[in-house]
Length: 263
Ligand code: GTP
Image 1 (cartoon, rainbow, N blue to C red):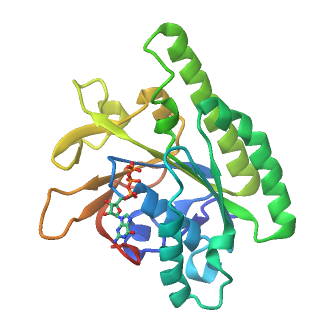
Image 2: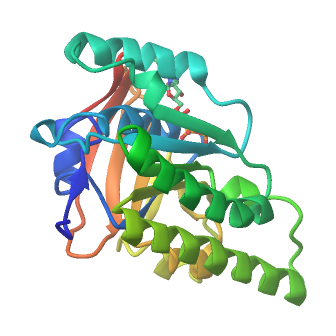
Image 3: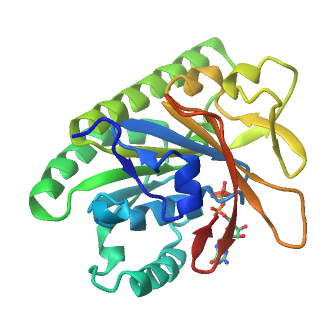
């Protein structure tokens, strides 16, 4: 498979911002405050992946791992209704999104061999799984961890275990792995390296930085920041590439509508 294979996110403007879409064989992070559109974009990616390569997709199924609240089945059905209108020849897209809840970082780490078995199985049975979404990774580390030396070591070891496992699967199966991450308020200058946009990351007028620190930042290949612009007549959002191999910093506005995410 070609090393630079990408999957469309179902929006030409955002695909251009990502230089063609979400890259296969690597881990991409969507990071942003609550309501910035991370889940919406992941749902749309899971549908768009089913398109043939002539339409920017991978002719593939997706695994969607959610770690907090309930999976938004109603929203997926709504988006798939709009998707089917444009692509009536495809089978029900909801049948190609495999959903699983995970409640702790340990559980996710121990799920990786099961995911691998499922990936092998999917290759022989249906359209192969080529997208794995984890929404959100930050939620798995929000509780249960103190700021003590042993907890920080346990956290780092889980970061490396999970990201190493996902990266191995991404390479073996040509997956695009997408993880979502939250932001925290920016304090001091120690976190600048985590998001190297020279003028800092702002969302809803607040200066923020990605959660989980530098150790996690080194675990992802690309980091894409989603933000809410200050309130205007229409609630606009913005996608900005923070770091990605061979990809310049770029940024595009988008809107979330009933039918999906649009540039
Ligand atoms: P957290 O999961 O809280 O971190 O947020 P997130 O970044 O994943 O936000 P999400 O992708 O869920 O986006 C939430 C925004 O999408 C909401 O503020 C709404 O503006 C929009 N949205 C969500 N569901 C719908 C829907 O059914 N219709 C429309 N038109 N917009 C929706």
